[in-house]
Image (cartoon, rainbow, N blue to C red; front, side):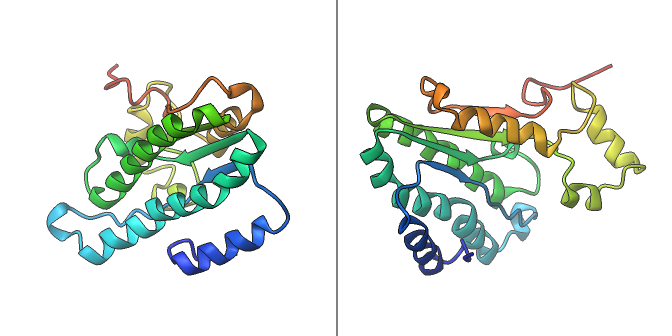
Length: 193
């Protein structure tokens, strides 16, 4: 356990984890949203989003890289978001999730020859406990979200896990530098009846 927003705590935890040998699969799965309009987004919120959402992925990938190189195999999957394409009240969050995609593409180019792939997953609206608490099932706003999804349902954590599992698989070695949107088709465009 560690505080991924704290570089010292993160580095110490990674050092302990790597004492048992190399780790060749990494899922960067953290995120804090800090929803605010640009005019109301504070520098503290922006810095906190960078520390947790972006810097922790950099620290984890950098720490695991030597072991992956030595093994000639590695899989890095970073959890981005459909918000990386733009979403109101998400300046800090969208910036960091888009940043993950940029790092992913860079790592794919740098490490492909070493048997290491780097990809991102960009979930759309997923029915997590956090989402369902904030968006009651019988609320009109929740129904509006579902209506905006071309497949006409919310995503599930299992939908996202399946995408991550595919990208972690040994057989996915020819897929790198990509962002797989798990969004029910929302990134394609607007859905209209």
